[in-house]
Length: 196
Length: 338
Image 1 (cartoon, each protein chain N blue to C red):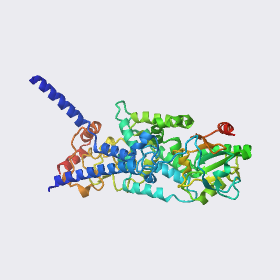
Image 2: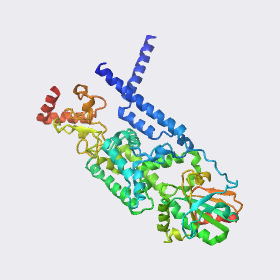
Image 3: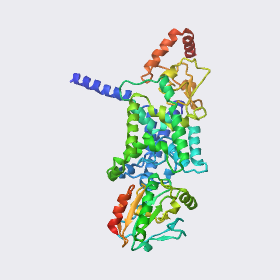
Image 4: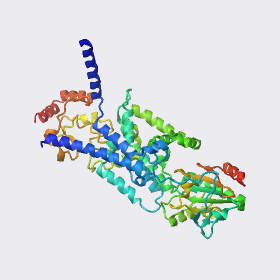
């Protein structure tokens, strides 16, 4: 084979290789490695019971597990956040205020939905972080809990990648609303009042 | 009948000629390929959801937003900011390593060949209007990206350890265009419009300014604003790929600098995106691709001939130079004769 032919052949080989890489990547991403379909808990249906491990804060001083069955008879407010989400941290004070104002009528759980850091790291963040008025998260009356990969409560309750999201479950354990963006104190109170 | 035939033939030929003249260069094909490969989760564009497979833990070389519905990888700049913002007292070794690896292997060749933002800017500059050429002012402005790198990419994320990727959040047009708008135009995300606030308005304005700017100024974002280009620029001298200048052959005629649309001082410096525009204009064949000596023989390198791709201004300057300065002109001729 002469040199010119070899160059042409290698050019064709490179093109074929690149096209093959593209095709393989497209097939892998679009067909094989798609996210598993999550069996969504629908609004208006009963939320299956779940249990989550909690972090130590004023809301759960002993760090005991949280079980949704224990919150039957209370309006359950489920807020999903993660420690590096600015929007989540900005709205957390409202959830704390709501928990303090309504006392036993309402149960607010703040679910950490990322598994990037270790549990100890996240506990350290909760101990360290303060809200805008200088109150430490560890002094919050809400219960901080951790979502797990197996349960994936975040996805089942309608999360599609955005944070924060807030879900209201009424006294009978029926999912009443899924809010896919930040909440204000007013919108949160209004939503809770409906189901008291 | 014959007359019609001839007319048809001419029309066919002119179409063919037009296609020939407008055929994409190899660089353009590679740019398109890279963009498609980074964003091959086509299902995401349909569903309006971000891909979250395991490849998302990996960085692509170019500035391709993580939040683009098609993206299968992460943006190195975004990952760097997030890693710094969450690092505490630890060193984010993974992202440092991957940026250094890209820098050493490819350098700013990434900007010229593998960055989707580069492609968008190249295409915007194709719009036919009056262009603002490079000057001392743009040269000074080109240092602004180092300011953005230090302040928005490094300082703010490290200072406020609450996860503020400041460049992504306040400036990055790749984020607004690929992450923001591509998600928002999907009907499935209609309810997200309610969440838009002043931040989006600001970022949208930044995007508009950059898009309009890029029509008039070649690669405005790359040259003045892109911190990722600034980082890769540190590796220009040592990168495995790129253009290199043979100082023994160089006659200092300056044609390469004239032909180049970036703010370079010499071929292959930190502003050079290795696009290769200078390779063909060099009359002394002093500019070549790094490593090309392993593949090409001297006879394979085409002598600098006037092609449609060669900048006419550069050719005119060349003529001017050789007529004014006889010495260098002679030297060029000697080289060519050899």
